[in-house]
Structure formats: C-alpha cells, structure tokens
Image (cartoon, rainbow, N blue to C red; front, side, top):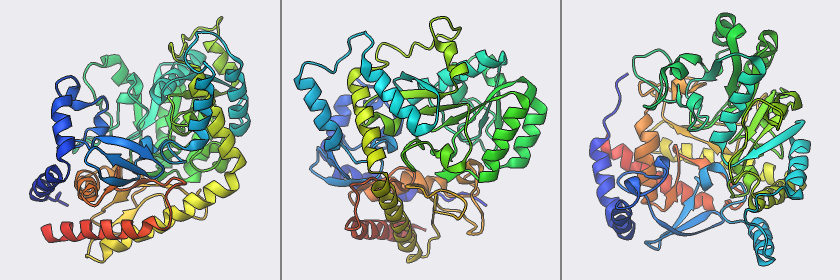
Length: 463
C-alpha cells in the first residue's frame, strides 16, 4: 500500500494556522534567537511553530493569542488531575510560604515518607528517586547489568525509554529494514548499538526465539506494558506472563517502564493488574504531580547496588529527592489512593465515550479511524488513546510495527495533519488524541465531536 501525500493539505493548514496564531508566530521568531528551534523539547516544537501558552488550568490552556484550547496532551500525559490541580498547588504554596521547599542538599524525612507510600502502592521493596524518566530507565539498566554481569539489553521496537544510550536504539520505524534494529541518534558508541536486541511487542513467538538466542547473555528485558509513543497499545496478558517466565529462566532482570502507565490505570502500577511482578519498575510523570520527579523501585537486592557500598553510581543528580517535588509526589499519590474508586472509573468511562465520538466523526465523512487502548475482557481499561488510520480495517495493530509503519497506517495523518487541523478548532492532541484527565467532562464531548468532524471533513475534501 502506497502512502498518501498530504503536502497540499499541510500547506493549507500552515497558512490558516499562521493567521490564527500570529502572536505565537511572532514570539517563536524571537525565541529562535536564543533557543534551538525556539524551545527545549522537540516533541513540543510542532511545525510551523508551537502555540505559546500563557496559562494552564484543568482541561484547558490559554495561548498568547487569547485562544482557550481543550488540551489532551496534559503535560506529556502526566497531569491526570489536569493542569495545576489545587490539591498540589495549595500544598506547594503552603510549604513555600513557610520558607521551605527548595533544594537543601540534605536528607529530609519527606523522602522516606514518599518512598513508603510509593512502595506500598506498587508492591515493591524499596525505591531510589531521580528527576526524569530517562534517568530512571538508564539507572535501571545499569543496575541490571551490574547485578547480572551481562551487557546485552533487550527492548521492544518502537518503545520509548527516554533519551539515554540504550533507549535511543530501535525507536523509529525504518522502511525496508528489519524491525527497529537501528540507533536513532548520532553520537552513540557502536558498542551500545550492538548490545541492544530489539524484539516485537506482543509477539510471543519472537520473544521466545530471542531469549533462546540471547537470553544467557542478556542483562535485562525492558518494556512498557502499555506502549505510549508506539501507539497507545496494551500488552497481551500472555505476552507479559511469557516475558516474566523467560526472564526468570535465563536469569534476566525484567524491567517494566511504567513512566506513562504508573498510576494511570489505578493507584499503583499496571503490572499489578496483569498479576506480573517485574524485578524493577521505573516511574515518573503522574507520580510527580507536575514536578520533576522519577523513581526506580523494585527488588532490594538489586537496588542495594546503588548504595554507598554498591557498584552503581546512581546518585540521581543535584535535584534528586527535591523537597518540593517529593511533597507534590506524596500529595498526588495520596490523593489518587484515597479517591481511586472515583477517579479511575470516571476517566476510563469518559475515554471510551471520547473514542466513540472521534471514530463516529471520521466515519461520517467516509474515513476509517481507530482509537487504541479500548477496554477488552482480559485487559485493563485505558484513559490514553491514539488515533490510527489503518488502510485495512481488519489489520489488528497490535504493535508499533503496525501503528508506525506508513504502509499499514497513515502515520502522517495521525500526527502532523490531525494535530494542526484540530488546533484550528481549539483542540490540542498528540498522536491523534492523548490522555483524559479528571477535569475533562462530558460537556467537552460536543466540542470534540464538532472539532473532529470539521477536521475529518477537511481531510475528506483533500483526498
């Protein structure tokens, strides 16, 4: 199947977007003088320029162009309570007013208090904090390599584990090349590229084969039980159970990257809903409550290698264990735990309604669209969703090899085209949709229906 050329439609969208967001365009031109491409995270630097925001509260952001935009990006999926939730901001305001909250460079009891509640909710033995998901996955891999004395790292093609050496292999789909077995950045040592084995998500047969070939020399298998950037896809229960069985058989450390999934499906880790306990789990995003905080949690015998007498230099950085971040984390985790029976049924139910609304909007204009992450009898319900456009409606889309392959799905439509078309309707999405938070409501469904409907009509006319 050939890919579809959207260049004419994109040119039209660029022109209208520049007219609708003139202040953002002006600020972006100025910002480019001091910032690379006008910002510090490429995912936010959409073409032709990003909307520059002034305020963010709840489900909406307000831009410098005075547009109130319904936001489904929600801080890289971190803001499960919406932007700047009062339960967190009021706790931070209180501690700052008492002359506390900034870095001291000392141990404070808040670290242990936050660690205790985190371990209790995740079923892990101990934890060490750092400041980003990228650092957490890097440290987890270092711990696994030190614990096993092995070099190889196995990961899933299309799985994003942050901007760290082993995570920068196998994240982009390469046409005509086998799977994702390529580095996606210059500057990596050749040895790193050769150490990473890339397997296919939800392909149990391939996983068995890869463990037979590489298991005895593999330090860890790191994967997301819910693939975020690769399509918002949940793992099959059998796949995760096989991963657990094989990693035990071959003495490989099983790492679940739950930077997105942790506390997104319930007030704990997704692994618990699958009844599969990894050796290590990495957490960030939601647990930070909007502040920079991440963690590696899991088996004490592995994590002790990061201690003062251990062999792994897991210091976490100057801002690890930052007081304000830990206060936000403890506040967020406690709030989610105490309100679990209200929060999670609400956001998963609303997400299913959003999925239905989006798919109907496209169907009304003769376009087949599928929202990922739907509830299934043996899988958890997800409040994160991607919109994919498979050329064959019967194609299952079970792995990033499907959702990121432009010959199977219209990838450009899911990303660049739909994002711009919806921004013109005052709706902001990532990968076609994004994450539902507690501040989204059923009253937003009307705006969603109209926005996606107008975007679908525009796309239909361009074909």
